[in-house]
Image (cartoon, rainbow, N blue to C red; front, side):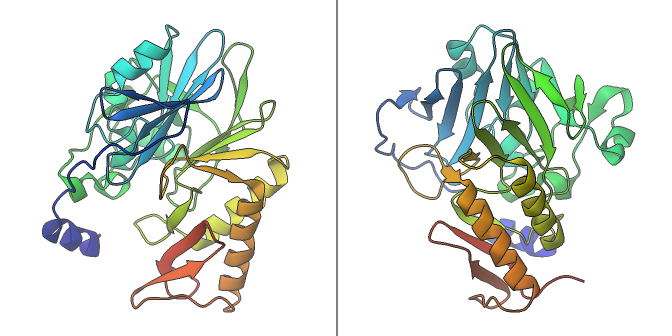
Length: 288
């Protein structure tokens, strides 16, 4: 936390970049968001002009819809969602970092993973992430109160009407991280657990043991051929897509790191290679 606070003091928030070239059928919305259909009922809402290039996912059933993450709140995502569906929306955070829950308070329904320590803190149904869970001080973003309307237990199946999502607890990046699995359509929405680029395993709450246990669990429950849709991309064009083979590469790299057989680059933070798409940023060595 101390290092992050020093970093926040010396670094100014990056200005928005120019619009990026995107492939068809990507459309721009109000010169900030991109709208990209993954299939007829799954839409990636990107923020490629924001420094972290966030991606949020609108997941549609016949009766309700899920917005998985809502971005940092640099722009209001609510008009985008309203333009895409008339269905009632439940906003769901993959985890509590500021760049994922910035617009949650704009939605009437919020669902949060049902973990005992979170329930204990949610007096009257309002849950306020801690500073270490939120990290918004990095960009001067205040911690919001989340008015939780639903608690989703790990393993629970969520019926959207003709479409079912399974809630998977996937700690590693943060203790409260979740992913959503659509077995029938072959999609796994991974949040910040896995996406193309550098995976942050050094921030408060990150844990390499959890990272490896989650990789082991996902490889047991996620069918081969599943499309992995992450919450950030490193480079354009299009939404960040990975495959189960990338999850396998992460598992193998973590096992090598645990055995002291994977070398990283850097001084304090080490960059450990996973494959051509992925690398892991962590402190040196394996935690006890």
